Image 1 (spheres, rainbow, N blue to C red):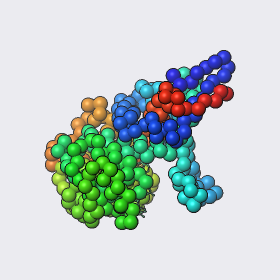
Image 2: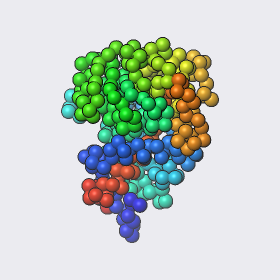
Image 3: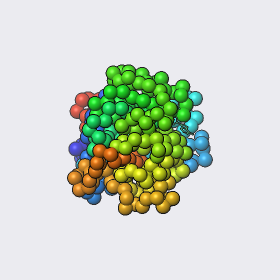
Image 4: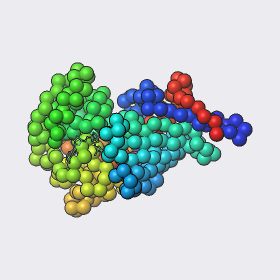
Length: 332
Ligand code: NAD
């Protein structure tokens, strides 16, 4: 238990970005995210309504993602948003902090930096989908996107299958060498190709862009491909052809988010699929729903990003940082 109660005073752990990086790698994030997806599907964990507001100041968008995992005993909130002017100040545009609370008393137990954890928990989400849905013999990893998140996605995906090479496309080709360097570090040959060729060659595709129109078309994707759509997390964003969503067996982290702000919003809006066609990945993890049904089937995971993922990895960071002497403490 993180919160040490001493009389009336409580000790709050302070876990900085550095401590998060030292304590939560792809393996820890995978386990935490897989467990919480399973808890969501069994009804033990749920996300609270998301708050997201334009501040009318510094062009910033600010909000809260929160929830409770009764199985993992994680209660809390990620607070943060997007400040487009930060880059000019030498800061990351996305800024967030996770607050964890003792579910038995409601007292604050930890403040955890959320910037690095957001990237690692998002990458864990697609890697959980690859672990459970991609063909076991997948050899070629395809990347659509080459921004901040893409390197994390590549690292986490590479752990799940014996990939032999990476093919990638990005709307801004000058960003691809940075992603290529990550592949090289992992010992994977890397080739920049057209988006169509990513579809033709890849057995697993990850899309992680800020696109508002389809970048991957139905006819480009081979039978048996697994595609993880990770960039669409807002109304209006879109990365793939709705016909591709309709052709696939579709999975998500949370159905309510998927149909409203996730990749399936377009296929559902066009009447190509309904909510009943979408399976929570947690049900596959729990063994209560089928995953991939044949080697020829296209599987598609819509990773929208839920607050419980943030709480799950923040709790691991706090526990490990405390155990390893990497956390500060204040008493309130
Ligand atoms: P980034 O700004 O570092 O990179 C943006 C990427 O999108 C680059 O590949 C860029 O070339 C591409 N891009 C930019 N504008 C585009 C446009 N108009 N059309 C097509 N592509 C465009 O961003 P990032 O941190 O790598 O995040 C990528 C996406 O992932 C964002 O949309 C972000 O909101 C989303 N995201 C999702 C989750 C989740 O849990 N699902 C979590 C974090 C971020």
